[in-house]
Structure formats: C-alpha cells, structure tokens
Length: 108
Image (cartoon, helix red, strand yellow):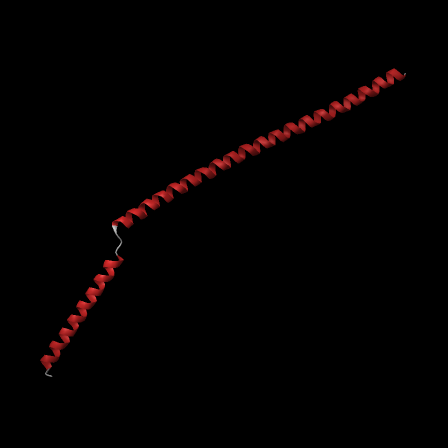
C-alpha cells in the first residue's frame, strides 16, 4: 500500500466515522425531542398547580380567620358563663341570708 492509498483509506474511514456519528446524533435528538404538545401540557399543568396553590393559600387564610373568630367567641362565651356563675353564686348567698333572716324573725 502506497502512501497515497493509505491517506485516501484513512480519509474514507474518517469520513464514514463522521457520517455514522452525525447520524447517531440525529437519531438521539430525533427520539429525545420534546413535542409542542408536551410543552403545552406541561405549561397547562404548571398553571393548574399555581391555581391550586393559590386556592390552598386562600383556604388556609380563611381557616385561620375562622379559627380566630371562634376562639374569640369561645372566650366571650366563657367570660359570660363565668359572670353568670358569679351572679348565681351571689344570688344563692343572698337567698340563704334572706332565709336565715326570715327564720330568725319568725323564731324571735
């Protein structure tokens, strides 16, 4: 094999290797390419996720406000109950004093 034949054979082998590499690259990109429908679907899912997160945040805020209202209402109710119990205790004490007074007046 002469020097020229060797150079030509090497050039042909390198060209074939280049073509095989380029074809393999084209195949990989052809099969791994993301279609526009997939991109649209991902964008729609992203929008729906964002809306769901906003709805969740609104629900959490509403629940926190409602919990604060109910806690406040419970505290007011407990205060009213305590005041009513104090009033009832005072009324019972006063009624007991009146009974004692009446009994003393009837006995004496």
